[in-house]
Length: 190
Figure 1 (tube, rainbow, N blue to C red):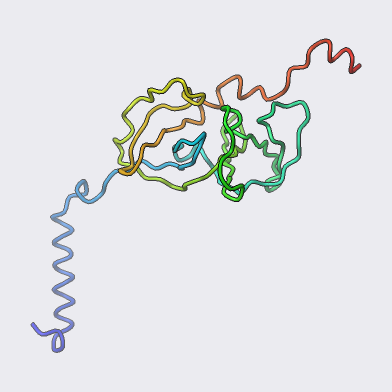
Figure 2 (cartoon, one colour):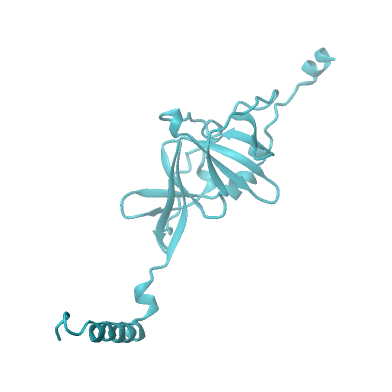
């Protein structure tokens, strides 16, 4: 069959062959099941939070300092008319933000009880992993963030720690961002 003389026949042949290929192909062989999450750097480690736990990623906004809060509470920012508390999550875990400030990002988290922005050193964006890649338990319990890690996985290039934001927001230390005022300090202020 020559293409120059019979292009319509060639197109019909391609269409028929494509339909036959679709019928004989199994969906399981064609589609890999992936797990997706938001990759970011925290305390020098590559982390990934499950999709849905991070609702938005923004550049570090201007914020207003809040007195009598812990040092890792940076302040409040107005994001589209909503007051967003901004937390230096690296400082919360005893580390410092790394790299160029221009690369720092805020992961906005929102659940039934918490609306907050977590400032991190770097965001890698959307990461995809084979569905069964997160099987290993995290063994380094000495790390300050270990209570928020449920497993480790590999994307074929490096190891990632799966960070569960609900494990962070259920921690009383994280939820109690105000400084404790001693009775002596309160009495002298009055």
